[in-house]
Amino acid sequence: MKHATDVDQADNSTLNTSSPETTVEDMAPESHLTDDLVELENISQIQIIQLEKQVSELKDLYVRAQAEVANVQKRSADEVKKAREYAISNFAKDIVVVQDYLEMALKDQSGNFEAIKTGVDLTLKQLIQVFERNMIKAINPQPNDKLDPHLHQAVSTVAAEGQAANTIVAVMQKGYQLSDRILRPAMVTVAQ
Image (cartoon, helix red, strand yellow):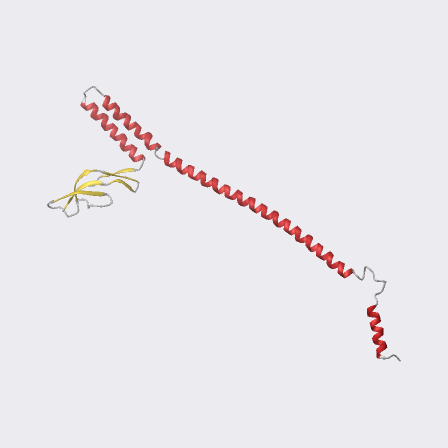
């Protein structure tokens, strides 16, 4: 019968001895770990490369988008500038004709007052057409119309019998408006 010390010695002897028959298969779990780590490292490097490629593509798209926005802003600014510069060109073309008619009237040496008057009348009609085409309307209030401070400028007040206060007595100068914008208010005399 073996004693307990013999068993302990036998166990110790098996623990302390290393068998010369250790194989690669016995070490396999450790090598599998390094293989897994290498594989993970390769996968993460591939992912990093893919992410860097995506970042590069997104940077390129961003730069292109910024350039496109800048181009659109520049084109818009150019169009606005041209619109401002040439918006008046149609009006200018029309008004040049009126100037031609006035110059012809001044060159008239005939002394025929009726011919000059007819020419000036035709020129005025041409000017009215130019104003209509360009949405310029006359502000010409009538006597007894109520004073509108948005359209009329009271130059003076007079006592007018039979007329209510703040009504127009006389028009000293017509006013003009472009669409809804007042170019010049009508100058009027108002009843007290």
